[in-house]
Length: 368
Image (cartoon, rainbow, N blue to C red; front, side, top):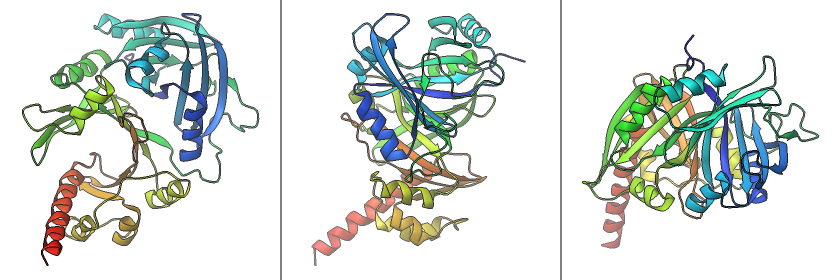
């Protein structure tokens, strides 16, 4: 077996400036549970840090709030604000994965070390984001992390039991990564040659005077998917250009949570106060012309601002949250797949058409 055949998402490392605010955001907005905490000196620097692990089912975030410029988390927040600083990858052999990745050209960040029976090792990924390989003892709970103490009262210590506002979000569908101009091809080559990912989808999206190129890479296990996006600087500046500028380089723009019932879960999440992006009503007038819904109704989608798209394998329904990040550089997505394997690019064009129709209608109404 090759060292990268069984990669999965172990957890997402978030560097934050206020651990209490970040914890409240994930628990109150998404219904996640705090299942472990830690306050201890960082092993590599001795700088003070506070960590909290939140999650449910296959979604796990480890939040780190650190003091001192020599701590990686503090340096990340200084450069980018709160955000994804590590996409940790589960593997049966962290040492073998690390050594093979470095042999193939990956930049080492942290050599293999074992603590509490868990082996970890890190390499650089894109921008200031790392990949930490995580190997757990056979039969050990998947939520265990060195230095984190389970919180009393969390039944399974994995976040599977959450509050009344908890939706049925169960896994991370994909990460959307914005790259600096000229970095799309090298980044794809890195994932293909170093980690044995495969490119499963590619497209060029043109909306008005803007354009972007996207390539999707996926681990051999199918459990880790990255949508890599690069702006076309020969066209008008767009949202990818803005992200790179405001974020200070490449990084994770959004994380998509998978659900088995998007109507139910968006209703629950909206009831907890989570704000989603609005969609022009005209968009829904055009849905019957684009496709025949496999699930849910146009009225349900319209009332909740849910988007729908389809490819040759089926349909997908999706919605994006409003960004509450001070720089506007991070948001989340909820997605339900009904066979579709793509990422909703048809919605970009459909939304653009809907906005144009809304503007034309407004001009006509204003001329009466």
